Image (cartoon, rainbow, N blue to C red; front, side):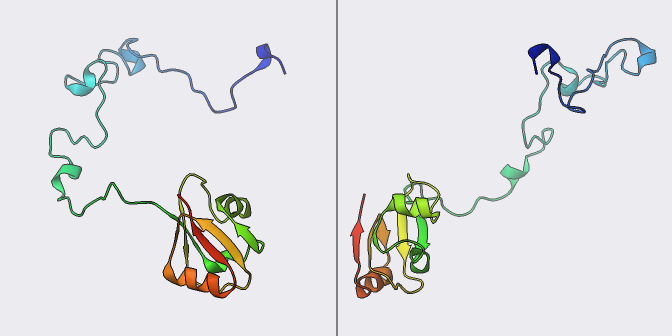
Amino acid sequence: MELHTLKPAEGSTRNRRRVGRGPGSGLGKTSGRGHKGQGSRSGARKRRGHEGGQMPLHRRVPKRGFHNIFKKQFQVINLTDLDRCEAGDVSIETLKSVGLIKKLYLPVKVLGDGEVQKAFNVKVAAFSKSAVQKIEAAGGKTEVTK
C-alpha cells in the first residue's frame, strides 16, 4: 500500500452537486434554494430547535425541579460485588482492575447489599452504615479516603 494507491471506501463519497448550470439541469436560477427567505441567503443555517419564529418547544414547556450543582457523584458498589476481590486490602485501583468501577477519578461508595465472607480492609470515599457493620463483623476494616 502506498500513498498514490489510496482510495476512499466504496460508497463513502458522492459527486458534488453542480448548481446554477441552467434550467435544463433542474438546479438552475435559484440553485435549489427556493425564492427569498432565510434559506436562500448565503451562510443560512438554523439553530437546533428553531421553529421559524414560533416559540420553540424548549421554551414553551414549563421548567420544574432543581439541579444541585454541589451534589457529589459516587460510583456505587455493593458488598456482594466485593467478593470478586481477594481478601486483604481493597482500594480504588483494586476495584478498577477487577472491573467493579470504571473511573479512578470518581469517588466510590460501598453499600451494604449482600453478605461478606472474607476479611477486607476497604479504603474508599464513603460507606453506608450497614456496609461498615457487615465488613467489621466479617473481621475486616473500613477507612474513608479523600
